[in-house]
Length: 320
Image (cartoon, rainbow, N blue to C red):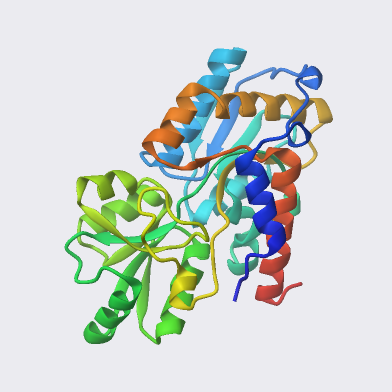
């Protein structure tokens, strides 16, 4: 089972608690500007919280820098569709992507269809840490993970909506731990997960922040916390380790580009994204409305975290 080590916790704490000058780009070096519109490949479908964040960052860069940034949704395979397209783009700064850390540190090792590796990208910035949870409709006949397992035994199986292979793996961990049948329903993003749950098409599903509005409206409830720290909206909900499952997520929303960017291009992009991430609009959406843990780890710390997590994934997948 995956264990989140000391190094992971220190990197997360350092990035969220205080973004130091060592992890941030030097604005004095950021002299490059694009010669044509920048394509922003978004690893999620339209309509979800991650899509809204990506588009808000794009709007902020356009307003502050005068660059043209064109958002293009390329959801699917837990961000793998976006990552594959990005890997094949020219490393000239005119194509960047927005996704989550596990797309690069996890998917290549657990999804045979992923034709890329963590080394294929230059990592630029994070926006916020995801509040990953397993949620269900408020009228579901279970409130906790133990009760979900009991319901699965009574019914024979339950259906769970997932956003990619990383969450499918978590569903498998839960099923193995309780010796129950959880039938995975793949989706193209968090918005579709919530639609599946609210429509009664699945019994539960994984989400990373957009569920908050439905928790507050009373339409959904959190069954279990996938993070190691307490949740921001429902801090009383137990995490997987409380239930004896030794796993915790380490997922950030992030920006990246094809590997091999020239230094001035990488610095300019990282600086522009950092300014957008720290803008009032992004802070209001991510911090206040989506209630995420805000923070830009910066290129160096983000790269180190992804490579560290990738080594763990490779070991677990037996490909190290």
